[in-house]
Length: 588
Image 1 (cartoon, rainbow, N blue to C red):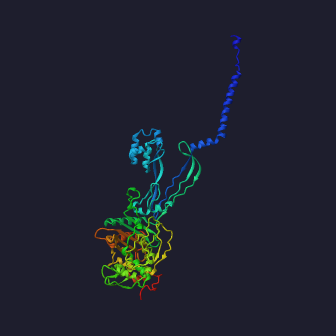
Image 2 (image 1 turned 120 degrees about the vertical axis):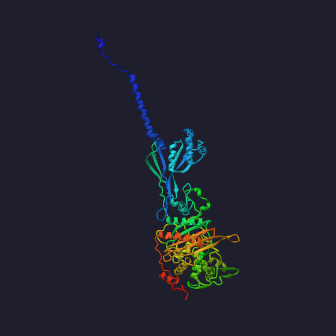
Image 3 (image 1 turned 180 degrees about the vertical axis):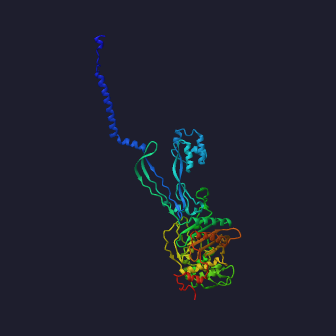
């Protein structure tokens, strides 16, 4: 081995290569640094904007509608979660979503729509949003998710559900598909029941999850509940008995109202025919009317206690006065007022129990006509009750300067004016409430209202006791009796007006108060155009009153009446500790 082979050669540095590499490295890092500086300083706002466009979203929280509950907290209207199915036609076409026809057929089956209609709705790729179906159930929504059709999406929503169905339909009302109240409480208190959604800006990750709450754009308002005066237990019984009666007597319609006389609260208000607000297919226009406040009719004999009470409050007759009704009829101008038979000389209590047209008209004509008409106005006839339910009618009581004797006479036995069932219930509450007229309420009250004294207390109390004779043997409504309770009431059987006079159809009614010794309830039953052999108020409407009021008194734990029955005169005196009967109530 030579010395030359043993010598280690040292690598030589090529300067120009070294400088090129170093320059390139410096240039790259300088470029990166410059780019970073440009992005972070000069173009920072644009980058932030681009980032926000990809991750920043505004979400709107869903505001559920408030509940409607009865006076005991039982739900009558609630909002349940549902889903809305919609499509983005562009996404459908971009992802070849129309390729699998079987999935679309399955979607059409669950949505209960023709598959051709669904395909037509996504035919145009420019349509970015189209409703396929609103308010589908959670089970249907889960099935749609499993179909995995591109461009078909679900959106959370809510639907109104009415647990009581047709029983409370006219009072509670219903909403449309956009959750706006259309009738009843839903319409009157729509703003109160509807909350406003909250709007918040958030940052979302790629998987759609919220990772940061950025700001609150708009703070929403929570929806409020409405507590109404209806007692669902009494309401259900009232509707059942009314429906049974209208079907049994093949009547066109019927209405029933149960009112708490102490507060003016409506404990039950039902009508037939009704509808199921959960099934829009049953909503025929004629079924939607709340006939208790919209329909007016001539009250017939149910007005007689009110007319007699008004006459006694203003006129020359007293509670125990005797009126001669012989020979069972008399003439007023060219018209005749008559009874079904000659009752002879009878007192006011007998006029009520026998429903004497002659007797009550003579009482009415003993009063100055202006005072008699003003008495009817004071009882609430001719004006709305302001119950805050939509569609209420003011009834019909004409305003005129001159009234003939015959017109006053016909008013006294229930013709020539028209009232709603609710107006009649309010007027009868005056008898039960010692002459005070309370405002009517469909909402549950926190305290008892202060009523207006429109009739002398002793007159109202005397009339209450007189009306008991209607339900006793010989009266017109023995079917209205209630075991264990003393009941006051009056029947009505009025012919319906027709072209040129009155036809052969009737509106039959019963207005009752229970119990007499401690009045708690006024119940009004109206049956429109009953068919068959029985068409009198005592046969058709009175039994409904008895069944409903019996159940209501028991549910409200009202104590039974005393079993001792006193004459009207003695009972009036003993039951009126605060009202003096020495103010000329009884004729000397």
